[in-house]
Image 1 (cartoon, rainbow, N blue to C red):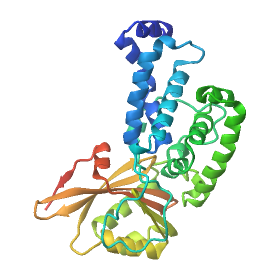
Image 2 (cartoon, rainbow, N blue to C red; image 1 turned 30 degrees about the vertical axis):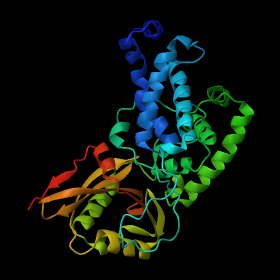
Image 3 (cartoon, rainbow, N blue to C red; image 1 turned 180 degrees about the horizontal axis):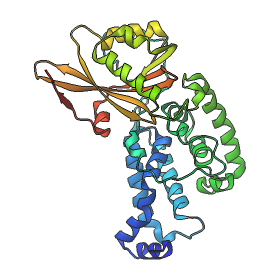
Image 4 (cartoon, rainbow, N blue to C red; image 1 turned 90 degrees about the vertical axis):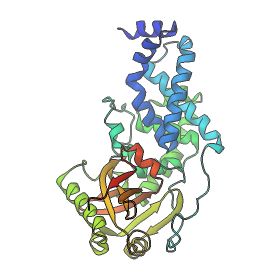
Length: 343
């Protein structure tokens, strides 16, 4: 059915027509909301609010743009409204998850609400090439370092940069979507680009640029070695995989550890404590290798979900490790809450 017919039917109250109209865009809209909000949970909420708003206002769609652009405008403004509601998300660091954490190098940039995005959801995206104005490659624009950098920006700068430099909309289109002037958009972009590029250059993420395509033989070997080191509790083998100035963080705790010795102290104090044993389930998040870490519970005879680790790599070494201790996140990656004890 032609788009024009679907719009007419949907505007007349046909739910099936509306679903056919918006469904091809729903996955990319969720990714868009995630970039702006930094949280998968918030992105899911924003997507639902976007679709409800689109359903209610479809009769006002004047066809001055495509349905896709119109949906992006609604989604962007829903995200901006959510960001204005400060009560939706934590603004301060939570208590340290382990009593024995060593002293950090300092406060990290990762905000308390930061969550990883499962690659399995990216697999559902239709092949939507960015417009000619895009400055960032698709793989770069979903990386954890890039999402973190976006969270450092004021909301409207964040929205302008994503619409213009990630999706490739022209400045005039961005101005229309944000209901502002092109001059305001250009001014916001200038400040936003400086902040994001500076963060990516300093983040230990290879300047923010993808080092290689995922799932290469080099990456597969690195994943296997990292998994093996964790499951054997071999600290030295794990340390061999890290670059000298490796960075470690664990949202929502806003602390950062930097360097081999800090990594050694952190893993000794938290992960490789006496009596602990793990099983590891490799996965992918934000286009990067990730690992579901399960801690043995000998009394119950199971391994319980413990944390999700996301790594950034350069060649055959790890430059950044980000740990998420909210086990609810692991279920979003299709991981069970427990694994059976093979013994």
